[in-house]
Image (cartoon, rainbow over the protein chains, first blue to last red):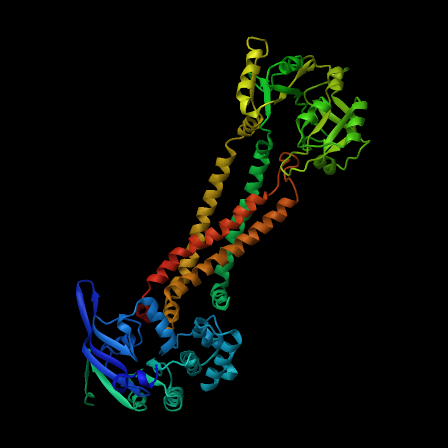
Length: 235
Length: 386
């Protein structure tokens, strides 16, 4: 996806999206006719109370789930119309995920964890090694490359998670509560890193968070309540 | 190959569980090796039976003897090329546990009718010159470290010599061998004329245990067998003629249906192993549902995730099975564990290949259900389970 691919300058377009989960005979409407646009190179924070549909929206934008109604486009791709197989390939090329609980493979060391998305490419072993080294350097963790997740602190594990998310150089970074499991200091370091990735490396970032301190780092914050976009709740 | 670290890492995740599962697979394949070898030992003779050979025995039972005079009459029957005879001697060498078969035979006829075993010509000449001469198969010669020129005392449980002596002494004049791995090279053969002359037991004289005849046309063997039995109908010693394979099979069948017994035991063992390994794999995959979700989130396709699980389960069973087959091969190569009861005891290459195939099949069978479980996994659901 390049600059010319953007419809109306927006990288992400969510149009009139409904998401309904079926639990037994009960229908749960999580997103209700929601529309959202995220510009290229934007750092957007997505806030809202628990159950407001933030993570569901993030999953739809990341191609991890499909809307019940409406459309989701990223660049020129209508991702809600892609098959499972096409979505998997699309995610591998265009999206990096950062999770609240880091979600690293405990059986692999830091560099092997970062290498995982590259295994899906045609890069040679030495090329993969170079990319991994660069990603670890960006997150400032080159000296911990051989360490297993259990020997790393929470902040370090999240850095490895971010390195894994950026190693394929995706356009879009989707972060689900990236500082939710970290103390303030480690959280700030992660937010610094995300800001740098946005500003210096031009990554478009959508970050779900409960934390106003984290959302303050974003260029724009949108609030979600009962499946619809709304204004900032009164404090 | 680039996914090997991930697969190997997952196998090492719960080392004790993987080790115990692998050990159970090892035991199953060692058992497979031994049962295959026992089956081979018991049924190998059936495979070696000549298609052009018929065995003629007493109609009532194999332990009833037939007159030696039948030979000439058999050879006059149309379709019969050659007839020769053997008699069960039932001898013991030093100790009852030193079991091997001994039979008095007519040397040239016997080797002519059994081309699968060979005796060097000079040893045959020596045998024909030595009335008390005997030849023995390579395996028995090696087992007791016999060499040509040795005098071998054999104590017969059935036949006595003049003076009531049950110990028969033979001069070893030859060692026969075979290029066929499944040919039995444990029996000892000695001359019938010496046996007949020296035998003081009334029922042994002028009698033989059974005949082996070679027919001109194997396709007409059944017809020839009928003619042989008709020839001796209504005599004191009526005969039952059957293909050599059926005769050997009848011997083996006295123990039971070996194929069925082996198949039943192996079936039970592999069914158990299937459950044990399948349970291990299911548990291993269930435990990392969230991680599978992460793999799918970062772009692994369903088929890649399925392949990772199948390769992991195959690696587990191939490692365990390979080690088991190797161990079985080593143990079985040491030879017959019964001290002579199973002369054809070896691990057939065919069964080794079947074992290798079983390793792979076991891996696929135990991996398929966890793999399908992973296939159906929705990424968003899986990530919630981290």
